[in-house]
Amino acid sequence: MATAASSTPSTSSSLPSSSAARAVASLAAAAAASDHSIAEAEAEAEAYEKTHVHGVYEAIAPHFSATRYKPWPAVADFLHAQPPGAIGLDVGCGNGKYLGVNPNVFMLGSDRSSALVGLAKARVQSLQGGRDGSGPEVAPAGGTGVADAASSGKSKNKNKNKGQASVGGEATTDVTPTTTRPDSGAAIGNDVLVADGLSLPFRDCSVDFAICVAVIHHLSTRARRQDAIRKLLKCVRGSEAKAGSGKVLVYVWALEQGNSRRGWDEGGEQDLLVPWVLKSPKPQQPKQPKKQRKKTHKEEVVQGHNDQDAAIAAAADANKSGEHSPIPTPTPAISTGEGGVIAGGGDANGSCGGDDHTDSVFERYYHLYRKGELEEDVLAAGGAVLASGYERDNWWTVAANEPSPSGPA
Amino acid sequence: MKVLTLNFLTCAVKACKSSNDSFPLHPKDAELAHDDIEINSQLLVNVLPRIDWTALRTTSTELGFPELPEQPPTAETLEADEAMLKELHTLLLETQMMEGKLVCGHCGHEYAVREGIANFLLPSHLV
Figure 1 (tube, each protein chain N blue to C red):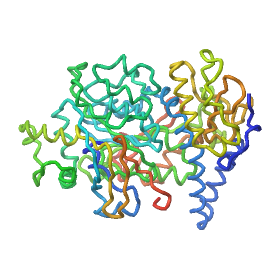
Figure 2: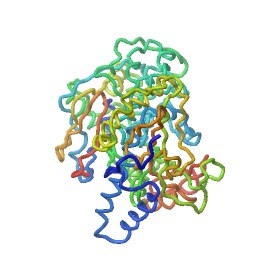
Figure 3: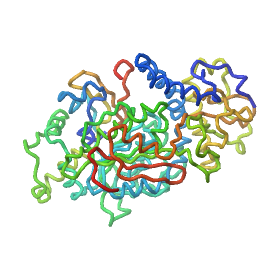
Figure 4: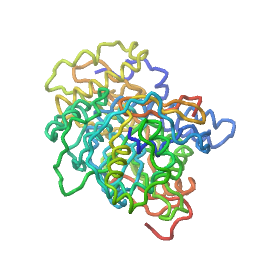
């Protein structure tokens, strides 16, 4: 198995994983400390997130998606509480698992990763036509055969499982309406687009609600995290609206995870690189497809984009052959390169060569929220906290524009 | 991308947010597709007050649909008018822009729409 040391560090991996937290902390400090360096620090933060967040999700999209189909209960409750006909946003929608949870609202999902939006689009299309999509069966990644099993004449959707939908495949005019849930009424539908959470394309005060689940913790400075909340609040109805301000649900990873296997807890480091392991499907294929290892390390560095493609292909292969069996949950190892598995910097080092069942490791940046911090950020963003809580290793808050109604929502 | 979605989209450039010219975005070289979706009248009636009608009229015309009335129907009118319900359903939910561009009337930036997905990521000089 190749080690991190054997691969030439690229410019994009100039922050060794072990010092990432310190590097990020210094970015934040720089931004806070001096005016003239703010623009510079902002650019650095963006570049950092490009490597340690956007690039990673783009590369692991199908694999990631296959593991993301179960809505968090607090999020599902929030969505079900919305009135019929409400319009909502899902900023950082990933594979779109929250689109369709409440079939009576229209949700617009956005994500920075076009690969994930492609998967979300396939999901949205498959939900159309009155089929109930709230169940966990709809896992649009990697050709798991789910589409076939669940299809009721929706043949067009099968081709779109990898986010590479063929042009024109969206038009389903030849499809007979499905009637699997005659008593549920037709879903109003959803839509998805590619956008950055800090430059959202939604008009101000236009929507009833917004959710932002497991997204803001990927921003590497506090100013940017607060700005993201500010941008969400701008999209929802203002407090002067007849029905009151629209609500924003934000959900972030908690520092306090005393009961989780990850071992993080109060007082620990908050800025981390968390590895995502793409396991190769070794049982079926003692020899891996050549595309995973055909490049030398130097070529990998030069051709970062091709590496991403290779990783996506590898992930798709993994899903095809093993379906959900290769479990890619973040490992407990925290950015320490344990066992030499971590392939340096995390920028789409899709393959490290070596053994037949090479695991690819991608490192995502996280800011783990300590208790109370999310509420502080909401207030700093000009919002009011209506409710907040803790759910399975995550902090969540329902926020609205000031002035807030008194009492919890 | 659905026509209903277009009614909630503006330019992603910060400086354009305050300009009236940035909304609605203008479709260019649009290729449309039609999805068959079961109509849900009650939901449609509920969505109506959330729509910017003036912008919808503009979008509808620019996409080559028949001109919409100047004023939006009231909930009562719409509930009773099956033809209009169907028309709005088709326009808002069944029509998708598959390919083309969305142009900001303020800064002129063009956002690509491919395979039904609009991309609002900005080049670095516009962020």
